[in-house]
Each structure stands twice: as C-alpha cells, then as structure tokens.
Image 1 (tube, rainbow, N blue to C red):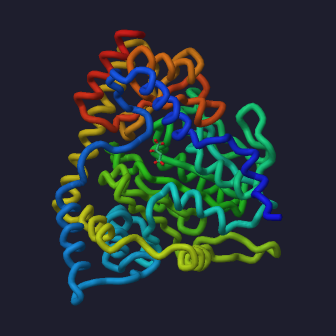
Image 2: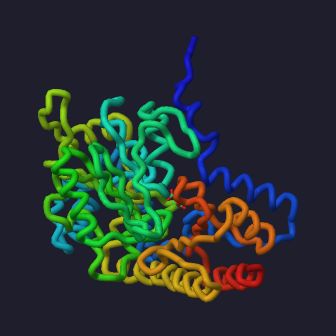
Length: 407
Ligand code: MLT
C-alpha cells in the first residue's frame, strides 16, 4: 500500500497564517457587516511600481509575437536579471557576489523551505530562532529531521531564544549546531542585527563547520546605514552562508512572485568523511530538476526594480509602509506598550501582558483588526502580538484608533 509521510503527523495541522485566515473567515461569516482591517499576514496592499508594470507589459508584448517570443528560460534566471541583482544589491555595498551566484526563483518562502533538501536526512543539529518564521521549522519536520513536538517545541531542534533581554537578537549557540537559520530584519519581531552580531555568527560557522541560512527578505526596510543589508557585508561569510532575498515586500511582488537565493561558489557543507562539498552545484542540480524558472515578464518586471525610476518608486513604496510602522509604534508606545521593530522593519512586536491568542481574539472581536499572535511563532512569542504595517495609512490610522479605544 502507498504510505503517507509519517512526519506530517508531527506537524501542527495547519500553517499559522491559514489558521488565522480560518478564524477571520469564521468571524466575518458571523459578522457580515464588520469592516475588518487586516494588519496580520505581511501582504502588501499598494500597486506595483509603474516601472515594473511598464516592463512587464512590454515583455508580455514580446511574448505575443513570434519574432520576440521566448519559451523555457534559463532555470537559474536570465543573465540580464542576475547581473543587475549582483551589481545593485551586493557589489554596490562592497559584497563580493557575482551574477552566477544568484539563483532567481518564485520567492524566499519557497527557497527557504526547499533549501533543506540539500542536506543529509539527519545526523546534524539544526538551530532556529524562537520566535521563528514557521517555514524554517515545518519544512525540517516534514523532512523527518525532528522528533515529536511537546509544549510548542520539536525534539531535536536547538531553539535560539530571542527576548527582551537580548533585544530579540540571540547570540550564537554555546554548543555544536551545524545549521543555523537567521532572519534580519527579523520576522516576526522586527529586530535588526548589527555588523558585530552577524560577525559573531559567521565566526561561529567557521569554527563549528556550520552553515547559516540567512533570510534577508526585509532588507529594503533598513534605513539605518550602520545595519548590514546582506550577510556578505561581513568578511568570511561567503564560505559559510546562503542568503535569501525577495521582491515581495521590496517591490510589492507578493502576488507577482520573484525572489532570489545567493549561493556563493565557495560556500560549503561536508561529506561524512569530512571533505568539503560545494553547495552551489547541488542547488543548481536541484533547481534544474524541479524548477523551470520564473516567467520572462516577471523577470523583466524584477529587472525594472533596479532601474533608476524603479528604485525611486520602490523606495517610496517602502517609505509609505515605514510611515505606517512609525505610527503603529508611536501609538502603542503612547499606550504604555514596549515595542520592538517598526523602524527598520515593517513589523511591530509588542508584549500584551496576556495570552497572545486571547489578545488576537480581543482585537478581532472588539476592534475588527486582524493581527498575528506571537505564540504562533514559538514559545518565546507567548504574550506577544505582531502588527504588520502593510496597509494604507488611512486603514492603519483607523485600526489604531479602534485598538487604542479598547485598550
Ligand atoms: C508573514 O506575514 O510573516 C509573511 O508575509 C509570510 C511570508 O512572507 O510568507
């Protein structure tokens, strides 16, 4: 008989954002007149930058004529986009990343989830932050690299606790951890890591023959110039780190889908006999087997993100969300809440002093505002709520008026 993957039985029945969506659907069905404001999942609300729309329309036109039509594209992305990204996102910041080390994909969620396929089925230790973006954990659970869950934690994982005491930036672990997931600016806490904090992880990875999977999906929100946008701004990172980038929040691509993963040529893992194994050929092999590339019009739209007009428009887009974040932060602080994030990040994280899900329900029922309960991101998220700045300024202001009136 055909057997199911038994590891799915260990996992929470539904993905966090699906659970929230189900609760919201239930609320809406019971209260059809409620005017809900969504500050939950980090989904952008403003239109694509005009430069991207124009580029995409032009590319669609090319696809509509035999002379300019394109079939399968290169699996790792068109050179025009890989070269643009390498220059604009990395070389311009002094990070030595070349075009052939950029792998264009349909987004950072997919890549952070898929990347673990390159590692052994077990026999090494995985470290994840707590609170954590659930994809890092769930994909390893599905792959059978953990034991069962108890009290919100899976046996076999090392949890790097992030809390108010460490400013939501954990130090490298004490003992041996072989694979480390990091995300800065952080989802869900909005915390950012300094150069020194990232350098400590890079040193750790060298000393412990570990690998860092660095999720930089929110780097476009960094406005403080002292904060690194890429782990490759840290000397020595090329050999020990893979970086994930996304245009979802940078350029409003959540529905358009385009991201990229950087796997430097010299980035390595190890074989059982201790010899080095380069990761880039493995990722290339995986992509060419399982992926046929991002569509040509989307890659042209992505290229336009880095044009002069595109950069200006994306900055305005992100600035708009950052203005929302500032408002959320200030209004919550005025109510006496201690907040994290919201200055170099679209997420504001705060301690509610009560159970996260109860607070989520209170905001949903009494203010008709959708947020994300911190407990859904791990044990250290208990008591916290994440508010996302992705909405119009008017909706954010209305949501805050409603929230402040019930607190
Ligand atoms: C979030 O709300 O955490 C993100 O939107 C999820 C994602 O990007 O997949």
